Image (tube, rainbow, N blue to C red):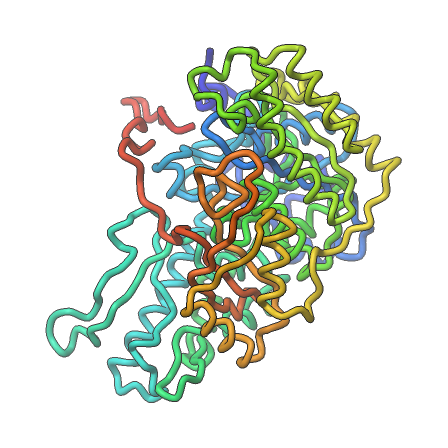
Length: 556
């Protein structure tokens, strides 16, 4: 059996201008990065902004397991299948970050015959968007420390610096550091921290900004520290905004690539829904809606994280409204949730399936709370049995969901036709009455508790004393009406990664809360979630190599 990277390397890619032409984009509106990648120009938006929006379909999933779910694979395969059915479809994906590529996951381009290409470029440096975010983030950090060193005119309290440096790499040694050691001229000695680039507020700002003007305005609002009076100090106060915008002026432009079957895909921004916003950029999604009849996008991790943030943050802020949601599961993952060991997942086990399917059940219920139609799809494996598939089909149909098997990994677009037909049927016959889960005017605590109880199924919320103080301060500063971005582990509906299935009688523990004023949301850190992950004992990087001919192996 061929690996994902072998399939990708054997693909015959079309020139990106031909892919663009298939959705009516002219060469003059492309900024080329070689033959197979391009950014969409700012001028293109002016040409298309008055067109009618197409339909918006969100792809999400049950909680991730080691058994695999295949959210990106399904998204890509569904887009290819829509093209097979003669529909003008455009895929809107998140960019991968280097941390997972070299850590646990290994890559994020889909899999099998449902991939976006060039796969190696996408998983590595791509068009440099994340480098630009890293540079803008660290420029702000440098200007902040320089201001303190050069007389500290703003009266910044070094003990109350909240802006962290970042790196697009998992490195636990950088979580907590001391900077400024050495001579007096080497800076003020203080405690500092690193986050992974995709957890930076600038990533969220890039994803949520409408245009350069909006980007600049949001960057200026970033709170970097507090002064000795306890008042916020912003990027505007440090005169950092213009230079940061200059670093990001190209990064804000969406990237166009293609699938193995030459279906166009806009890949831009947004991974890591457990510690950030976790969706494709607003700019890319809005462009996709103008350029296509059907836009298929995805949100990170399970529906309790990515889908919730997509609907409660992205859609709320951008005025978007999903027309349908595709919920991805696998027989293997549901059996894993039912207590089956990883090496036993290939064996038929209806009893374990019945235990584990409660995870799927909760995600169905959650999406239905937003009044959006749901289509459940099973990403098919050869070890799945007819009895297992039928059990899940019956389960879904009993709960008012459409159901379809997906074989896109093995068969590409052809393997997604059944799913595509179900989606088209749903778009035609079932109306979406989308609304966010909670109203803006609720208090921050009420918003946190709504998500914890309604989406996670928690009994209640326990706040650390520090979090209590932070919440009070954020509301006093006038940020109480912002939506909440919950930072939670992705493996469980609870904040305890070991609790699989559908946990009950648990509390959500809030240990820290901070405001991302530029992004426009409040972040609540739960449990042991990390904004700078570490590498596993055997990182994926150990298996990556380059042949004498220059071909990359081991990236998946």
